Image (cartoon, rainbow, N blue to C red; front, top):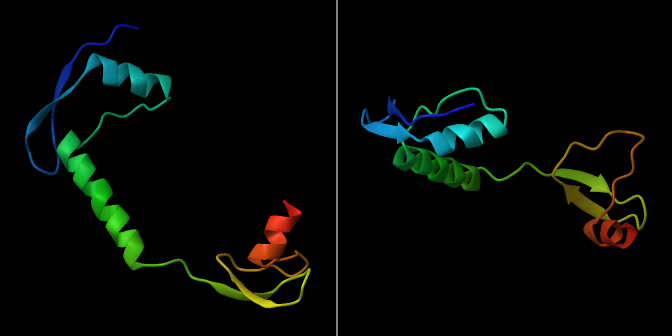
Amino acid sequence: MSFQDKTLVCKQCGQQFIFSAREQEFYSQKGLTFEPKRCKDCRSLKKANQSRENKNYPKQLFDAICAKCGIKTQVPFQPVQGRSVYCKQCYQQLR
C-alpha cells in the first residue's frame, strides 16, 4: 500500500499539520484505522495533562490480610473471597 503525506487540521488548536506517509504506514502496521485528530504539540500537551491528572488521583487501596504471614496490608485492587492476597514481602518471595 502506498501512502502519501496528508494535511490535517488539529481539532484543538485549529492549525494544519502533516500526517506523513511514514506515520500512516506506522498506524497501518499497528492496526490503527483512524487519523490523528491533534497536532504533535497538542497531543503532547494532552498526554502531559492526563499524566498530571493521574498523579492528583492516587489509586484506591483496599485493606486485606496476607494469606501467608497474616499481617494487615493494602492492595490496589478489590480482594475477592476465595483468592489469596499477599503482602508485598510475601508476594516477592512467591515470585
